[in-house]
Image (cartoon, rainbow, N blue to C red; front, side, top):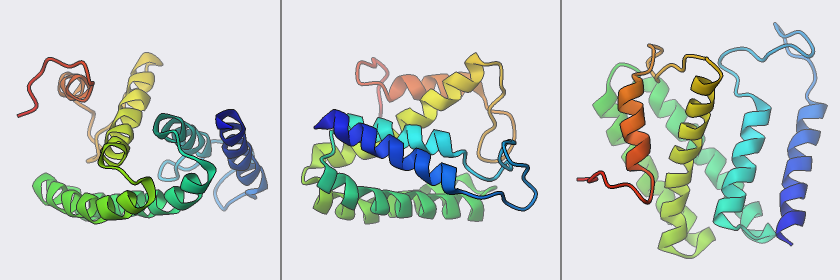
Length: 167
């Protein structure tokens, strides 16, 4: 059942991508504009989170629209507070609290809800590590080059077997 759901989600993501026509300023087969998320990364994120949360088909159907709205609000908050990190963090916390109750209704358990927020961070960290491995230089949310020593410490803190104190 899990494999069927996984294959179904991946095929849906591929079919949506295949139906997407050419956009202004984009050559067919060319890279997407810098501000547009790459569909294959979004499909990877859907597959990763679905697998890690062990979502049933019914849960996935309810979960993904809420998660998409959650991510949209976070992106808007980041855009509105590009230069004010503390203001963004406060707004992001309010958004997480708001969606915490929505996720609880769907996932029925605090452990799984908390895991949603950790999985988002972990996926982003995995993408950042992959970019570094490929020789790309990831940028922070402010557009400046990322500070790898800080990122490495944060990634280590988020691991369940970490010895770093999260105080």
